[in-house]
Length: 425
Image 1 (cartoon, one colour):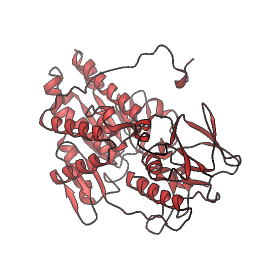
Image 2 (cartoon, helix red, strand yellow):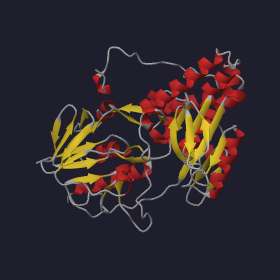
Image 3 (tube, one colour):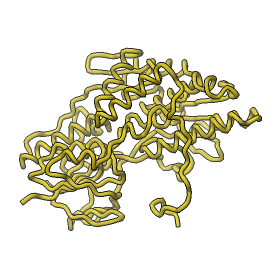
Image 4 (cartoon, helix red, strand yellow):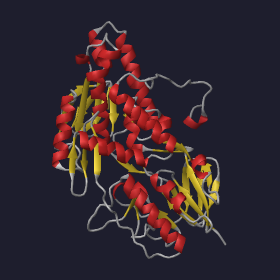
């Protein structure tokens, strides 16, 4: 008889597992709170109005039409897992499983700073990136008609927390807006009135990349008039004032948080999961959750398997998730556990605006134009759907030659009628 395989999360890990599993052996059910797969490495371009959200999103049902036998997609956010009764519960239903694969990824980590999520902007999801884009454009429009110079400066005070790839990329996008966009589309705004600060707690940017990449990123950001402050750990944010651990503070009306992530969590009934650093589920070399035999597996950013090469687990990257999904599908399809997972590092990349990027490949370190071309090629082939690939490519080519774009639309959602999904009554 076919077993029922439930997959929680439709990110890189979840969608690749669904595509590679033998659906003649398993009845596959995919659960996700969004009805589409998105491409997180390009969320910063949504936030900076460089791409349309539809260009990096692909509906699950459209992708699944091509898969025979047809897997099921269930809309919902997993609230609890009963490991004894083998059930998964969302806000809408309870689903039983024979085998469970958890690929729910991560969420923002605010390191214990209470209520910080209510005051800072994040770009971990498409919806968060869209909200960030609206806020940036809203501030530009208000500043353009403001006659008070001090108020304009306050409106245009931006701070990015975190100097990893996402922080560097969104800071670079804001820098390009300051240097090139304002004088073209907002002539009433003096670019010097816009301040962009990037605060990183360590002594260099892009900690996971080479020293050469970090140095180039620092130089490129400063060229784009971004004030990079290293060794600055954020302590609190209140009344538009950022306070750092050294006691110093700066004024900023818009703070974009990219400083850290933690694993997604669930209410667990029955045998609890063994958790490691960052709340990640501990797994063995086959990505089976420790203590659950063959019943429960975890892949992607939510899983942690410590090895001599990666004592704190594999990096939380798309390539890790894809490779884990393929290895797990291989083992499940053969009903055997012979193929252990081993991460093959293909390198890291980050972009800092047009024609500026860094890439650490196996035996090659690229920067500038060659790295930017490599970055575009790798991201382009990783996006699902030919229509999406073409749309992104056309947008990139158009944006390279001309900054004005139809994507800078300020569209705020209406408040009424109230949506109970957001906890409103």
